[in-house]
Image: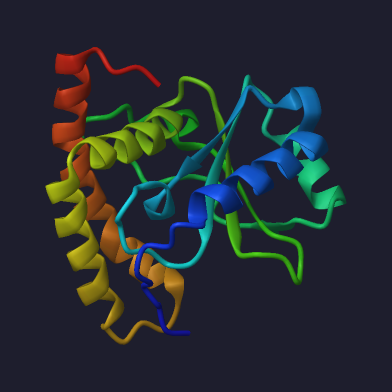
Length: 184
């Protein structure tokens, strides 16, 4: 399946808001926060036409994951994120659950992560850094457009190719966060 990168869509934030409302209805008090993450959350950034959402929970990934499954969301792998250089290597820091939209609904990747874990912070800091640094976002968008032209056999290969580039963005983002007092 080819990877298609789309021009920025001004409707992505509104689509996120509606999906977040629906997720709050499904997940109730199991969730601490729901955030729009990924490229569709960065104004002006080209992206796959898939809304990435991070659902932050206090400690239990399985209960909200089960609630999503009961509502028709499809459970997916991986169950962990890749370990970022310079970040904790404890596997618990990278644990997550991934679900995609029910059949026939708008494409969504719903990442369930635990508050304060390295992967939960990574997604928010990556987004906020790109929002604050449009030239970096533009360079990242250009990379994604070029990478999508490669002959992938699945989207996972595209994601694997992007991981080190995202890490190259994250490393100065981490310094920016320390310098500016950014918090998740």
